[in-house]
Amino acid sequence: MRLPMLQRQRDSQRGLNTAGFISGYRGSPLGGYDQALWSAKSFLDEHQIHFTPGVNEELAATAVRGSQEIEFLPSPKYEGVFGLWYGKGPGVDRAGDALKHGSYSGSSKNGGVIVLVGDDHGAKSSTVAHQSDHALIHFGMPYFNPATVQDYLDYGLYGFALSRWSGCWIGMKCVTDTIESS
Image (cartoon, rainbow, N blue to C red; front, side, top):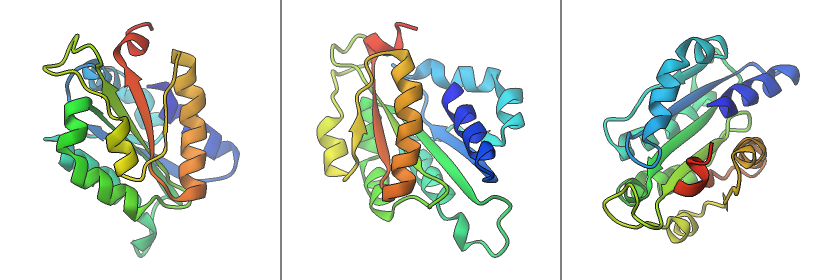
């Protein structure tokens, strides 16, 4: 939850007028993420970060893709919108077409996209065991595999910078054991 606020603060310190957009689909092991976002609505609003849960995984990914097309607007309110998509492992499969097209379309120079993939290798809280590595590679999406909660913040800021610099969407694995360690 802190990552998009940190990104907005970093942009503001650099003189960039950006906003954030978050969308994803509810479900394990990231099922608590949307609840945390809703409870922090006032903080998100203060940082110009908009959260809209998706009806499904693909529509959420398509909405995040749209956030990267701000430069096509005639008079955009912001210089860029950084996007964050989240979903559990089987949702990565379901949203594969939207994620792949988003990744191949790229990110805007002052935007950037991070894709949080909830992998549950042991099927502890999902219907099937899942690993997203091969899907992310297929989508042309470099990814991070954080080992600690602090890594999510550090790699997340690196991820937005990398996404802006390269134009790639950046994946970040969210393994149940690491996520639940907080």
